[in-house]
Image (tube, rainbow, N blue to C red; front, side, top):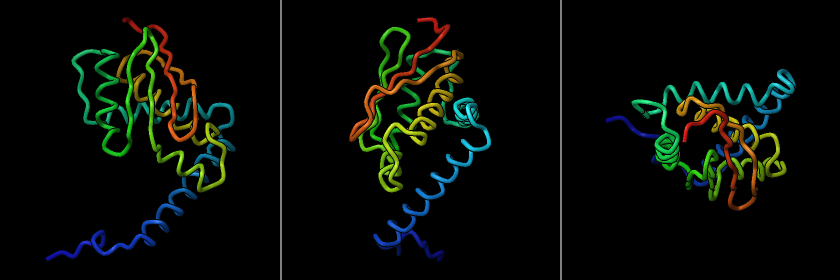
Length: 156
């Protein structure tokens, strides 16, 4: 029988892991900013596009509404996320965002570089799934995060 370490983890072990992951994410975002500079959003979008190709999502043809439904479905396994379209903009809400928890742990402002990188990452995923570039804009950052993705060239 294979023993599973996950079954023997304490809350202290989980907290230590969270602190370590928060530190690593903070250093990752900071290092990218240092080396890439103003192109950081482009890097996050490229990472999102790459991720979209590996997600368990298949669309016969680009369809923005279906793409949003599928992205929300995939991310809802770890996030309390919702989304809907209003014209050429996708409105996305995340309640209890793990990225927010990282920002609070590391003493970063909400809607700072870590949040922005995550929003551009999601924009990259949606851009790949829809075939149309997307640009994120934060509406509200706090206990609940609201942002929109504005698409250019999207057929609605």
